[in-house]
Length: 416
Ligand code: EPU
Image (cartoon, rainbow, N blue to C red):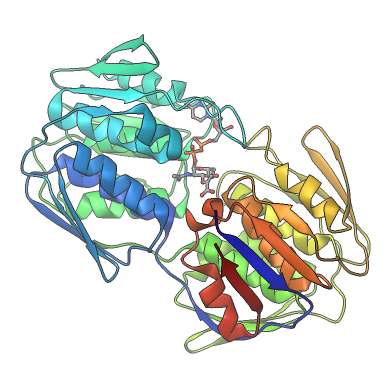
């Protein structure tokens, strides 16, 4: 198992270019199921989750090839309609094949994902929506088997805002008979990017990016030729890395309005932000100010930035309150940050972070993707050596993070 060894306490300085968004690329890859022919998707990040999704699509009979950030998917024939347990348990986003498979093939058999490190994460709302669209749903031996000759348009209200639930039903509705209205839909930029990709395939979708999305079903779609948006969470992670190391980083190739909530909070913490023609420069203050945050669906503060922001606040001058309102168990990084000296107390969904002058290096263990990112940036700021174990979590969502950090001055290396 790979580990990252970080000699901390160095101010990061320089430029970084952001890669394609994992959470946009994954659903857009599954959208290729909806059309017969070759789909090409570019600005694909080099991540473990992308190759896992490629393996799943290949299992369905789709030719998968990836080179230089470009994926080709040959979806002439779908030869299988199941997403097996082994793939779904390594990557929950596998569930995104459900809507497209039912829409194109009339049937799908998808392993129920089960709980994960950050919460229970059920898919009841995905299944409720498909039922409303006329599908029969059977739960058997750990699988959801969903059948519908042709889905029918319906009005679907989500009790909880769900990103992949909105995406699954939006894809399913594209080939349904009649109009589907998704109410209390997720407004995340990745949902909008998927909608734009589907529209480029000929789909009739209105309202993506608002809480009500209207999809008029049509009989067929053409394959994709699409480039995914930059990754806002990778961007936010580098902003936090600038802040925590007292550094100055220019971030290139990002859609900054997607990070408004994070940028506002970083400004409150004292970072200065200068727009230049080819990017934005984030500069840390002498001392970080404490800032409260509460995670919320977009445009609120993203849960995927909570762990990294907490690492930043662990060395602020004062106390910050961090509330996690999306997932019930997304504080796994706290115990590890405490091993580095952080003063954090948890009561339910609230973390009280009392800033200390500096963190100290320690061996720590990654537990999920964003928790790992928070430990890496904590290690960059800490005095001494931090060893981050179980780096495979990080590799699921960050493109060779150490290779992007080294040119900024970080002393970080990977060992087997
Ligand atoms: N929920 C239900 N029932 C459902 C679906 C969701 O109760 O049928 C609940 C979840 O348990 C959770 C809340 O709704 O409490 C929101 O979950 P959501 O469905 O929005 O999460 P997701 O679609 O499974 C995506 C991202 C996550 C990100 C969340 C929240 C992808 C592939 N994953 O997950 O990304 O944290 O939205 O923004 O898009 C990550 O990249 O590290 C990551 C975990």
